[in-house]
Image 1 (tube, rainbow, N blue to C red):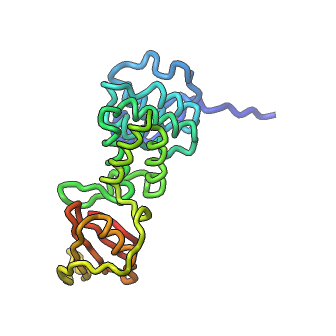
Image 2: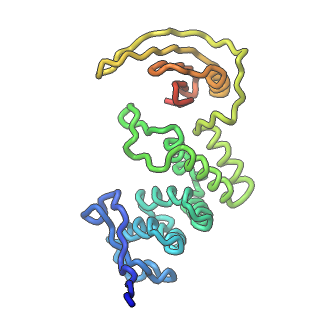
Amino acid sequence: MRFFRRPKTVSVPDRYGLGGGDAIELVARPDVVRLFDGVRAGERTRMVVGYLNHPDPAVRLAAVQQGPEPGTATVAEVEELVDRLADLDAAVRAAAGAALWDLQADTDCERTVLVLRDEIRGHTMSFGAPSTESLRLGREPAEQALQTLLASAPDEEAHTRLRALIDEHVLLPDSVEADSTLRLEFIEKVQRRSGDGQVATYEAYRATDRAQALAYLKAHPVTEEFYYLEVETPAGTFGRDVNGIYDI
């Protein structure tokens, strides 16, 4: 009879360069009651990030509950905690929501909302230009993460304030009905050539607010590649291409 030993360690990606390598080595079956006991201050972020990505959901749950601490949580720890809002395990998701409220109650979790906004829109703005380098979740998990965050609000007032933040910052086209009767102010229709020689057509309009822009865009699907409908509003510019509605 052959016996197979359980691995003593597991590796998770070192996305922040915290361990001087491509992976963070972790104990495969750690003591989840005292997950970070004995961890040196200089090693704590690396271990928190690592255990938040551990393959065992019980370990991830312990990492959420014992890891990022108010006043000392690093950017990397908080970003990993945001990812846990979309965890496959329901207990981990709920714990992540509660932990983020503990960390960001004074701002109604605005930083988390902005991170998830970028995941939903499909890009971040880097030096004034769209970038996809830091995206990890994707649209649907990020939308679900927002719902987890809302459900984790400590009271009705906090829930209302968070809902207002989401309405202000996050583009959720499904929240607006299409209106084919809208007539917007026409700005221009131009063709632009990209650096690689591709010609794209931009048809631009102006609307009074985001709701009007979304209602118009939902009523006007785009079926051609490299054709863009864009609507300017005081809250920003919104557009539609063959992939759907986006904001800039």
